[in-house]
Image (tube, rainbow, N blue to C red):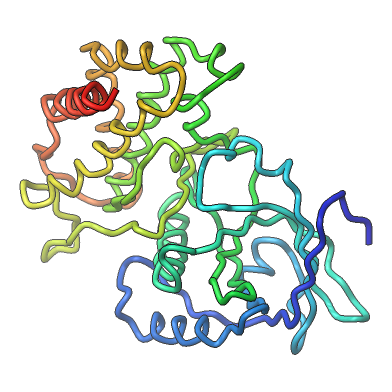
Length: 329
C-alpha cells in the first residue's frame, strides 16, 4: 500500500456495525437509543464504522469481524479550514485485516471534546437530516466513531475537497487580508444569508452559524459543526412553524453569523462600512428569503404568506453586530 507522507496511527480493533438511521426528526426514538448504546460500547482506542455508509459513500468493503485501521494524517487536506476550530484533522483511512486491505479513503476526524457523546449523536443526526432533504446543499457524510485513548468520542466523516469556509474571508489576516475586497465581502453576505435561509426552509437552526461553519465547494453550500443544530416545531399538519413564537430561533443563526463577521481579522474597517450599507441589508434579506423559499419548495412544505423575519429585523441585526464590535474595539 502506498501512502502519502504523514504520521500513521494504527487503530485496533476496527469493527463494522449496522448502525440505526437517526435524524433530527425525532431523537427520542428507539433507533436513537440503540445508536446511543452502540457508541457507548466503542472502547477507548477503537473504531466503529457504519457498514452501510462506508460501502455506499466510499465503495469500501465491510470486513467480517474485527479489522485493523491505519489513519495517515494529511495536513494539506485542511487547507481552507485552518481557523475552523474544534481541532478537526484530516487524512486517509485504510481498513482491513492482515490479509486484505481497502484502498485509502479520505476522511475528516472531529474530536467532540466539549459536547461528548451527546454532541456526536446530534451532529450525526443533523448530517443525516440535511443530506436527506437536499442534494445541492449538504453536510458531511458520517462514517463512524473513533474513541481516542482518553475516551474522547471522535466523529469520522467523508472528506470532501475543496471546501472553503467563510472565516477565510471575514477573519483574513496577513497576505490573505490584502485580497479581501469590498466586492467579495458584499457578495459573501448574500451567499451566507442564502445558506442560512436554506437551513430555515427545511426547519433547521444551525445553532452556531459563525462564518467558520458556513462554507462552499465547487457546487454546493456546505454546513459544518452541527452538534447544536435543532429543528423548529411543527404544526398539526406537519409543517414547520414560522411565526412570532419561532422568530427568536430564526434570528439566532442570523445574529450569530453577523456578530462573528467582525473582530477577528484585519479588514474589519471595510466589513463595518459594508455592514452599515442599506444595499447590504437588502441583499441579505432577499438572499435569506430566497433560500427559505427554495428549500421549502423542495420539501413541498407550505410557507406562511408573511414570514416572521422582516427587512427591518435584518437591518437591526447588522446594527447590533456593529454596535457590539464598536463597544469592544
